[in-house]
Image (cartoon, rainbow, N blue to C red; front, side):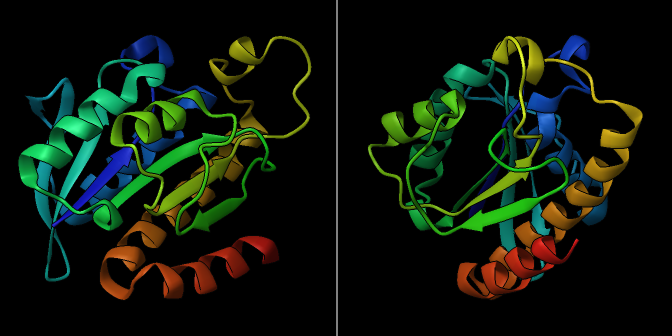
Amino acid sequence: MYLIVGLGNPGAKYEKTRHNMGFRTIDSLADKYGIKVDKLKAKALIGDGRIGTEKVLLVKPQTFMNLSGFAVAELMNFYKIPVENLIVIYDDIDLETGRLRLRAKGSAGTHNGMRDIVQKLGDNGFPRIRIGIGSDVKGDLADYVTGKLSKAEEERVKDVINMATEAAASIVEDGIDRAMNRYNTLSKEK
C-alpha cells in the first residue's frame, strides 16, 4: 500500500493558492482513478483505491500546512506503511512556476509542511514530488504562497499538475528511479 499525501491548507479561502499544489494534485489523482477523498481520519481527508494493481490511500491533511506531519505519522502507523511507500506532493518556491522535480529522499528544505513531516516521522527517506511556484518572490513569503495565481501561472500550473499526477502513478507502478528519469527530464524540456 502507498500513502500519497498532497500538502495544502484546508478551506475555500486557500483553494486556488500557490500553497495548495499538493491538494490539487490529490484531486487530480482522485478524478483519474475514481477515488473519493471524503473520509475524515487522523485529521485528514482520505480516500482509498488502486493505481494499477497497487492499493493507495490519497491524503489531504486538514491541520494546515505547518502541522501536516501529525496526519502523515498517524496514518503511516495505523496502516503500517513503510516510509519508502510514502509519496508527498507539495509546492516549492525554489522551482520556477510550471516545473516539476522528483526526489527519492532528502531534506525538507525551506518548506514548513515537509519539515513537520520529516520531524514527526524521524525519517526523510521517502519520495517527493515538488511543484514549482516561482523562485523570484518579492515581499512577504507567506503572502506570496497563500496568494492566488495569475492567469498565466494558472495555465502553467494546470499542465504541471497533470504531470505530477502521472508522476505519482509512475512512482507507484514503476518505482521512484524510473519515475525520476522520466519526469525530471520532461520537466526540463518544458
